[in-house]
Amino acid sequence: MKLFMKGLVYTLGVVAILTMLGTVVPRPLTTPAAASAGAGSEILLLANPIHTDIALPVDDEVRAAFADLIPAGLPLDMPGVEYLVIGWGGRSFYIETPTWGDIRPMPVLRALTIDRSVLHVSVAGPIDRSHPAIRSLDITQEGRSRLIAAMRASFVREGAMPVVVPGAAYGTDDAFFEAEGAFNAFLGCNTWTAAMLRAGGIRTGWWTPLPQLLDLSIDLHQGA
Image (cartoon, rainbow, N blue to C red; front, side, top):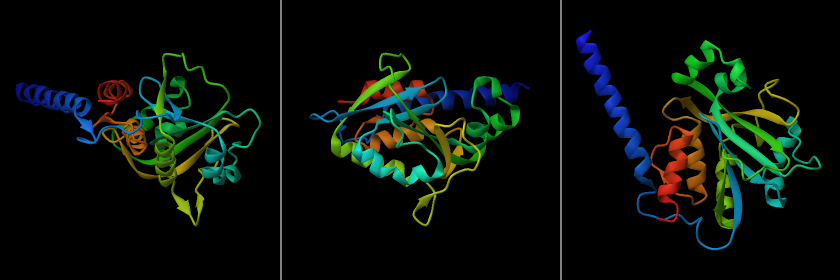
């Protein structure tokens, strides 16, 4: 028992050090963020205690880039749509846990080990940018185009079309799609979000597995 406790303390210490380094060490290491330079546009980072999404203001570029999601039932062309919201996550937990009240042991277990990944895509009307769980990020037009390209590259495709997960939507304004990459607790939804932001020129920490760490790392490194 004593040996086990020593091992546990050692493991927790290593994780704590890696978490700290993952937040304070910037990625990319030497190239400053391009998103803070010059006039551009805005994207939103949406967060809850364990997950982050990226919300893109819908304009002609976004409509054209994601038009191939419409045949799967995503109402991107519906009047009143102002944002396209995209997040990446583990298939079992993401699909089977639409609310905190739906949490069950097996999806949680898969989320803590290895699971197939999916993308959850939804549309939204106005979003209150003053909400504490919402962060506005400035990004250049060129950076936003790179971000959109990185998001599109995250979809599994058959031919040219993204692969929808049948019957997995939470409602009428969203859909799930098969995603590239495997999900695990160390390389999860928030590390995907960070990778997408970096593709757009927004500097983050090296490893940010939690929303709070991603947010802190942006504070530390954006414009540094």
